[in-house]
Length: 463
Image (cartoon, rainbow, N blue to C red; front, side):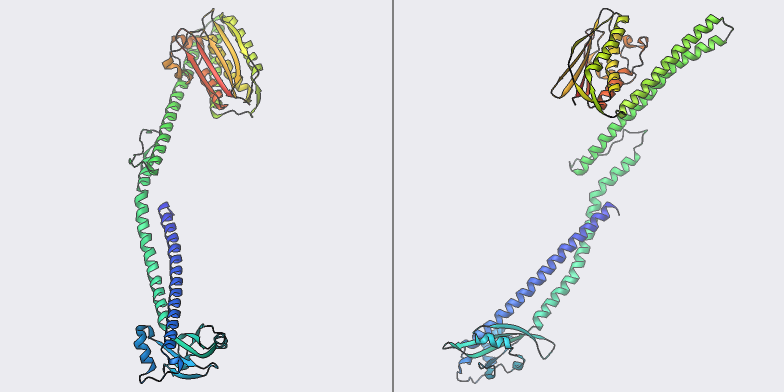
């Protein structure tokens, strides 16, 4: 079922349960109220009979006792009848003369009367209707002198209850049905914006991610849903843009060495060459092949680092790792005329992949040596504190414009000629380093100014 249908069904079921509960409670309350009023009416009639003197053997009135009581009580005496009994339960004295024989005296009522207690009972009359009977003793001089019984048919009360029950049976389904119809219309109107969002989302494809879900301006749950969808679409658009740019840049990087390789082979095949010339072509081709291999390895490492660390997370001591990178940096710096030294190094342990973290720091070291002029220096440091280990690689190289510092972590980005193809890089080193650090829950930042060198900082959570 659709959400609209489920909402309507649940709304109807809950409403039916509530209405049924209210109906049962109201029916029970009406039944109790009618019974209480009927018992009070019987007690009133019995008290009036006692007060009018019929129970004391007063001189008989020329009028019928029932007529006298009807005149005194008015509508209160309607449909009621009575009789007087002696203490033994035998009828005597004045009666209503109508259905008095339907007033039985039960053993329980007689025993209660002997103790001076009033009794209320319900009996099945000689006809189809039940009667309610009140039995009240009349006490004189400390003993029971007479017993008065007042009865009333329950036909009217039960008829009222039956009519009320019929009303509930008829109105509850009609009310729930109308409420369900109104609930369906309300749910349809409330979910119409969701249908519009669905239609808009279906029109959005990978080729056109610029379309956005429209806001209604109500600042409700649906507007927040639209904002969430739009944020997701914006992230998808950025991801698709980066993927397309990455694919184009990778194709360009692969095309250049392949073109050089193809050109050298074609030139060698145009005419007969000496063994030395063929050897030069093969050496040049081998260099391009090695460059392709390095590029393919870097692309594979970048994809793996973006997906997260593949090796199990284990404790990694950063101080020995930093010393290994320092040894490699010293050899690179010696050939480039750059001084490499360790400024400070303390013990620090993190959770992660030691090989991946070594590659990240080594990429920063190679990058620092590569873009530092002869006579410059590169410094390594490792500090720990506040639950964070900090690795810093600082150089005195060409530096980076702060406005373009964020771009250097994107794949295949070279900002100027100093960072061009002549350096031998593919533009993936910093991107790989950042991906590895992020996969380990850390951050990689750069602080640099043109001509004043750069400082790369890796922050990792301590184990």
